[in-house]
Image (spheres, rainbow, N blue to C red):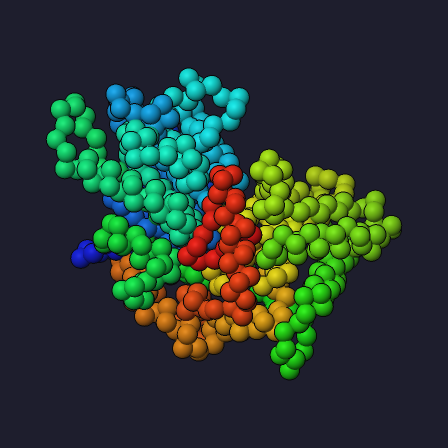
Length: 534
């Protein structure tokens, strides 16, 4: 289990925190719903973040994938609005959909997932929760003056286009959360929205008010699995951008930040012998990758059809762009008879699907959410196991809590270490085990070697830079003794690899970035600070 650090400028809080949600200060109603969902005790980051957020402080929550960041901010923020229900009404200058809590999410699929979590968490509570834009079937009168709104920054900007409209939209807002904050803040639209909200909050603090309950400053929460440190005065990392807006801000972090999940087994498969260092031609590289993927699929089918205690299996296969994903999908579809031979067709269901940013919002959301919610059944529950494969781009790499993904395949290696962590973080979640298989071409070798060095704890000056910034990344609420001595075989965080430049053409990167920005008009997010969105 990872340790947690909490820090603000000039202050540290190293007090003991109870492992019980109620003793942390979470409302009884929420505690009952949490228990009903099978969650019995807080995770490390929840123990540390909840008390800070209950005090109304701004906070950066930086913890590895699958660590429970969503509940770490939802539980205290909802507890706070439940405790001040009398302040929930509309104000004279508020827009119809002005929320008490605004949650900013990078894309529509993650919005829907957070909305589902909220519905489960707040069942039987009299809270109004919606998305922007609201579903067409929902009447405005049903969601007027909502308690919680979930939306992308692009959707908010599209709806509230000028400062006056934005002030009216945020007139009732008590808290704003940026989930996947490095992505939201790294995007120009998201950053502008945060800046506007910060200015509105600052004016509230200094403005006289005759109201019975004058508006309070907005509480800001930034949650992320990848938050690079500030390395220079000119740094443009999301953390540096937030520092310029808010000054010093409290930080909660786990000591496993920027590290792969504990239960993950990482495998690296070179496409060519190590001595062959020349870059592959696109057609040759694609052929080798498709052959390697098909071989992995065949191996897994053989395993599923020979073991007695088989289970359903789910795999994610990541590609760097839509064209490669389509080629991989076509190759799988063309060889289904080889992947699942006739003798196994009645004992195994094989389902392969494709999703990338070029699909319509409706089709994309349906495919992603179907895969997310598809559970894994024991053999006793079904006569025939199912092997599900989703071939995708990075639109599903962040935040989505896939149920029981056993294997992540990087058909194309991630373009940076941060995206590598997000991809492999779709498996081995919540203390479960998982497997990540990465195909390595010569152009991937430098980044792949850094990641392999980190996985084995190999001394490397670049990787060791994490520890130069550890206090700023995680806070200083944990003593050195809590961290323990690092063994030579311990994994190293990948913080030092985040700035690794890939051997990709700058022109290609710019073209992909320009193409990805088209998604902004559809309520998606783009990111110019940490990478592009295919």
